[in-house]
Image (cartoon, rainbow, N blue to C red; front, side, top):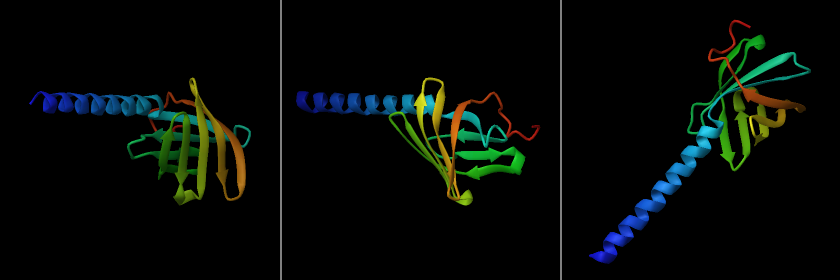
Amino acid sequence: MQKRRARFLLTAFFSLATLSTSAFARSKIDGDWEGTIDNGKLLLIFHIKVSGGTTVDSPRQYVHGLWAAVKFEGKTIQISMPGAGAEFNGTLKQAHITGVFKQTGSSWPLILTRSSKKATGLND
């Protein structure tokens, strides 16, 4: 009985540790991030939810709610947007995500910062 209880407590401890670690990782990246490509001409807004439901907006191109898949491991993030044939690969560095946005054979540097915009940029 004692061994069974000890095994249960140990399993519960590791389960909680794993859940809290993944919840912490999500909280670091989940949220609204924005940046511009093409010398500041094109604003991109990423609504990141690691657990699913990530979307991307490009207000100047009238694109809102483009579905995206996210992989976040350590400090590395990969966001693929199959509907636009695009992807972003970056690294979380303090309050920024620095990386490269690629689409149709071209690539641009992109630095994302936390967005103050809760909307999809429709008023831009």
